[in-house]
Length: 540
Image 1 (tube, rainbow, N blue to C red):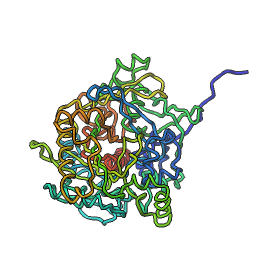
Image 2 (image 1 turned 90 degrees about the horizontal axis):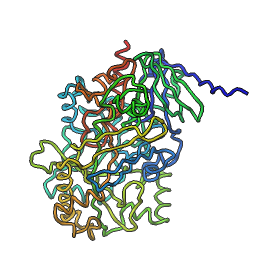
Image 3 (image 1 turned 120 degrees about the vertical axis):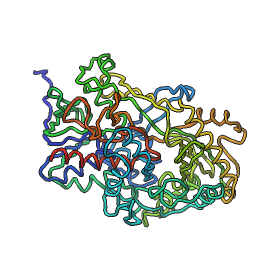
């Protein structure tokens, strides 16, 4: 009997896209619009055929479920007392757009202008705005900032909780003006978020981009694919070696290999393939294709903390989820009308404001939540309550990630270095104090019985900072680990081509040189749209 290894299944394509997340689904859909090219999209996770993925409030079920989630965990964080922080990232068609909180935020115009000022030609706000508009099917219609008729549904909240109106009212009472559109002329102010929801269902990139494209004969989508390493002919990327459901598979790319696996898996795959810091790779026995020290560096994320209150009225999500009768009523309403409390995103209202006198633009985001509980996997508190998550939007703290081993099944080591910069801690402290002022001011004050966490005995700046370090969490907006730029740590150029090799790009959130001021899904979709145009333009 022969003991020779099983020969790999061979798949041929012109473009290979690795990772079917917020950017990868966009790329596969846009590239396959050309019937003259063959596109193959591979995804480590499963199909998005799960009820809880498509009901908006289902993020509470999927955010810590290992069948659709990578379930990453950081190494101990020095500034957080050695705590490890849980990182949910989507492992399913649609990636994190299939399990996130559904909030649509682009960030500030100044974020992208800074990218351009750092040498990334074509990435200023005026350059990227057309791609935000191209992607968008905005419920309010098209204008100078928004598009209509694009694949991505962006809609208003259909269910407004009185707590959210009170939050916006109290913001105004303490001097923060109302803002009807955080993605319009200016970000600053308080108001309601819009969401990636279509007729009461989640509008992930798998739903909005990939599903219509899968009807095309030139697009192949493979799930259950574990990427092992990118294949090279010299310094030219030619394909991918992988396993699919435990069997070897080799996908050949005649034109380009595009890595869109996210800010953890994209740099991991580059390093497994011999692209990264040479000394680190050699330490794991990996042959170096190109010494690129910035791979895995420049890691950024939004870290903050929450303040929670007991509510005077039973109008919170806690009240619904703690009552079998109210759960059934909410579920029936969603099934019949696609409306009600199960149709809303994780944060319904919020604000962007400046709490440091030296800040020229908003340095703080509030994510106001009509529920209260722990982080991600911890569940809701067993009482009527609501919360405000406080997040410095332009963190100065920087981290990195490295390989744990040369085994593609091993999770990399993640060192986010949260709260290592004192300015981040200062903004968060001032943010919690602002949240307290708002909760003590009408109309929000009418809904407050008392402050549950951290509690009134946490009073001084030092005590607040300690509370945030000991109990805070991330918003899972990891970016930057394959940064775009011109400096020594840049991994891709402003055409998103990996430096030092050919036929290889990275197109996802990992290319952001700096974290944007807000939730990252909309910006990642924009990167996919702009990246697809670059690929097609460069091939012409």
